[in-house]
Length: 206
Ligand code: URA
Image (cartoon, rainbow, N blue to C red; front, side, top):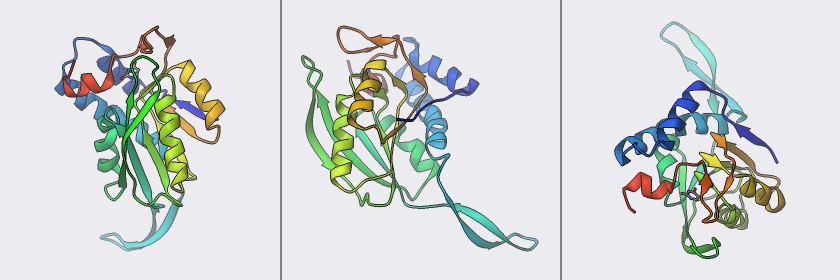
């Protein structure tokens, strides 16, 4: 399984803002979106391009355009924090949603909503910022594969070794792009040092 951890001073700077408990929800959302640009750019870095004939103001030339389609599937609700980054970079990306709630006692995923566009032959970006146990991500990948996806990249902010192991077992064909591989899961299944509950920090819930 391929894992790419961003190696860029901007990513480190933005992730530090996200990690700080002093960062309020508006700043957290804006910073997550900014970090999302770097993550999505990396997740699309191996995308083929197609030649396209254009006219510059001076002369005709052959340019390159991103091969389509691109689909983003936001794992609710934390994945919404990276959605605008995809839409800003690839405005015609189709969007799906995977609604899954973590059972707080077992940390296993419980589905409550799914809606996908056509996934066949698309680059599918699964937006799952916190790869903790890997239960939600593995479940979401099962779902998109059932619906025809065969080119899948998980876009994460922070990943834990336990989640990576789970992904190696369940979905070795999926690439992971993240800003950090953190130390461990704590007994409450939070990533440490982590950044807390991504959904709560995005939306100001407690
Ligand atoms: N989900 C989160 O939002 N944070 C964690 O640390 C783990 C799972």
